[in-house]
Image (cartoon, rainbow over all chains, first blue to last red; front, side, top):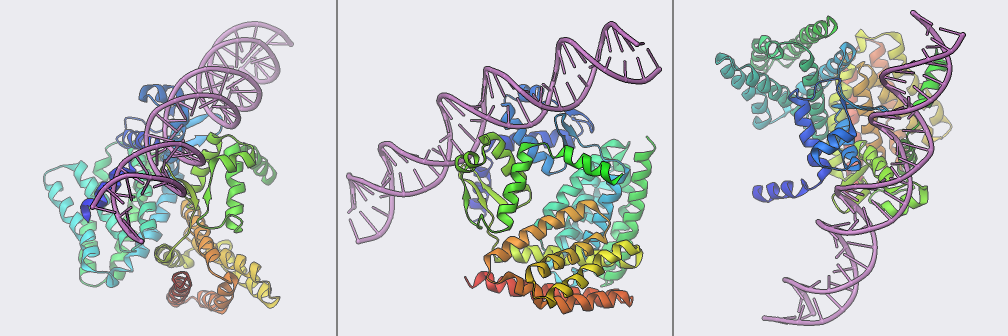
Length: 223
Length: 223
DNA sequence: ATCGTAGAATCGTTCAACAATCCAACGATC
DNA sequence: GATCGTTGGATTGTTGAACGATTCTACGAT
């Protein structure tokens, strides 16, 4: 059955606009297309060998994910999150993740493992000074927290929030350093959860958000 | 300043695809385009006098809002939420709204009024047996709760959730009756909040979600 | 230095066309 | 008689060109 599901996923990947959007999404997230850059329909369409109409559909898909912003008659730009965006982003994360954490006592071991495991992986990568993988594991940790809610829609929306956040990290220097700094805090949250202290873990998580937000906002506004 | 902001909003309303999307959104939400209906590009485009490409852009905008679903090479359909969708929807609402409620002590009077006022309005309309307006006020009540989070993004996502939920109500009979039944519960939540008992209000809100979800799911799956 | 204007560049939208895909009806086979 | 190809017809996916509308840029007037 798993093989069938996989095959179906491959089949659905047929649309050209979807493939173009996936390609552009990678380029944006790895920083090749820098925040603030304008994406010319003619230039990109010519480079990728797709028509303007198809490219515009791809742009719509990425606008939905908030990676691009569309300004009427001016074009689409790679989103450049500002301090206000980051504040808004963290306000949403506070509500979603702290709210999801309340579900900890009610969920099964698989959902709990999705929170615990990434923290251990982050520690392992941290010992090897592999900051990029630490950052990736850190995101998996927070995805696991959102997963406690058990809502597919909410997880998808959170993925968009995380992607937007990575865009904000792109603007600041030395993005991985931030992830590393909060690693012991994550570990403490997991320990509090395992001991059954959900409220304590929620408080710690909220502290993490406060720290990370002010840190990121400070770096964003100083430039 | 308010006049300027209004004028700017009018200026930005320029895009044809946007206007088409707004028109279709109304038709979907008021039930004229029933859930499950397939929207032919040729038929709709011809009726509205816009080209296929523009119409397809409008479709993308509405699929972003989850009012339409897009099946590759088959077309777009008005979404028909099933039991699983509603469960997912309420799981998300539980997390978001209960999480937002924790912010009650921290927000100012304007945000609190956005929670209190709709409940009083709902009572007034309920006394006049105007169930449609009761339902509208009920949604404003929950929008107010989400607004406690102070995140523009989260409020927008919640608006999409509410729209999707109204689509689910379209499938069942007698949708307004549901809103009416939970009116006294809303009032109790507001009273608990005003007395400073945030945890008690959160518990009541969660009870409301449990009731509303099972009620709606039961009606959806019985047909 | 500011303002207004002409021209270039780009976007918004439409149209026509064709390939790719889906669907329903029709027969063929067992 | 039910299941399985097959064949058209209808609809979507994608392309390319075209033209009006909007924005941007640079130049010149006041």
